[in-house]
Length: 214
Image (cartoon, rainbow, N blue to C red; front, side, top):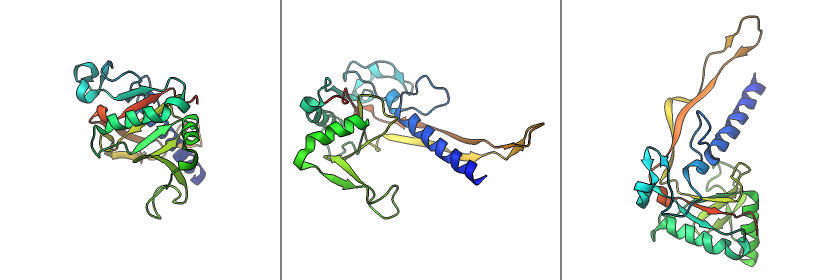
């Protein structure tokens, strides 16, 4: 039973992680992923309804920042990263706190640093999530990390001040009682979660496209 619970926890973690990053618009009963929330289209030209709001009718706050490095990260990457970062910040100190990308995008950014590489320890206290000794790259005020579930050629800029995961207090990875089906010795329980990703200002989030090619 302990082994099955551990296996279920790992599967839930992976599925939840994938939901939060990919385009889940066609997946039933899923959380909104960054690939669905943010569009790889120029600011001011985005369309479609998200959260019941038409992006085209409320461009000031309901369209995300976007730039395209045109498959030349070595030439355009850092310059357009600055553009997206600055546009998300809108001249204030409320800048993106995290940048999520592919392994190739992460390594391409790392190649541009050369002798100015800046590493940041993950975790500000011993009990922080992750290994405090693990180091991450940082672009200005944002930590950069990569994930295998990230959409190819994509770099997401996100700010937790405008991005929330809301979970029902009575359905937060709760489990049903174990039941036994007729003519079976196995017992089954369901682990369930009710919630959704909510965004309050898409303009403060951004996408950089075609980052996998240096």
